[in-house]
Image 1: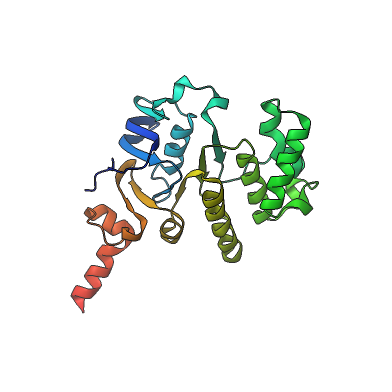
Image 2: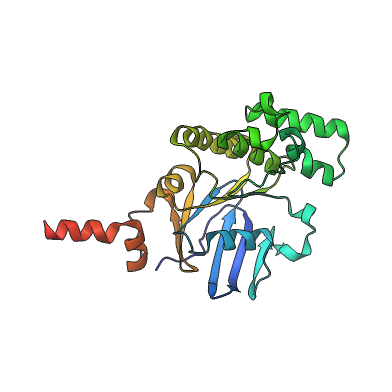
Amino acid sequence: MNETIDINPKKQLLTVQNLNLTRGTFQLKDISFSVYSNEILAIIGKTGSGKTLLLESIAGFQKLDSGKILLREHSLEDYSLQERKLGYLYQEYCLFPHMTARENIAYGLKMQKRPKKEITKRVEALAEELEITSILNQYPDTLSGGEQQRVALARALSIEPELLLLDEPFSSLDPVTKQKLYGLIKKINTQHAYTIVFVTHDFYEAQNLSDRTGVLINGCLRGIVDSDKLFTSNWDEDVNYFLGKREHHDQKRIV
């Protein structure tokens, strides 16, 4: 089993310590790991493994049974929602249907009571960067899946979060749109130094987008490794089966 708390010279932005959470019959069990400033961390697992629940816990949306979540070395609970500087992108995007794309992106800034000129400038800058200027006055139900995803991403980025949390951000997109958005996520991380944590069931996404990848199985984080070592690390039998390594080994042995 891989150790889930890594020794890394980078500054720790987020630390999860012995997280336990029960929802119905499902449990997140004794999860510990750190996220470092400016990195991209992927958490992979099957549907029902607890990925979204873990992401919601990091965001402070779920009350823990036990354990701690530290942001900038202080308890997450010590910060107001605004002070946390977290951006969250839901799998279903969750755009407000009665608001235009422009109004959706501006929503968080309005809640922070930013000046109108500042809001306008921020929204237009994000729209240009994400290539959605032409759709700012459209409503969500008139937009394609990729356009909705970009608007939702712009809304999450509008408050300039230190930590961006993405829940299966590409699962409903076609391959061409996915490739474009992969590049966009890397660009955001590089140019703005955002720290990003995303959950996915896609090995390719994890390996190609993230610096490190963790594997979550049945509510247990089995380890975190450098993403380029995802398939070569010394995992336990459950992880090997999830990654398809045991099947490949059995095929070789039969041959």
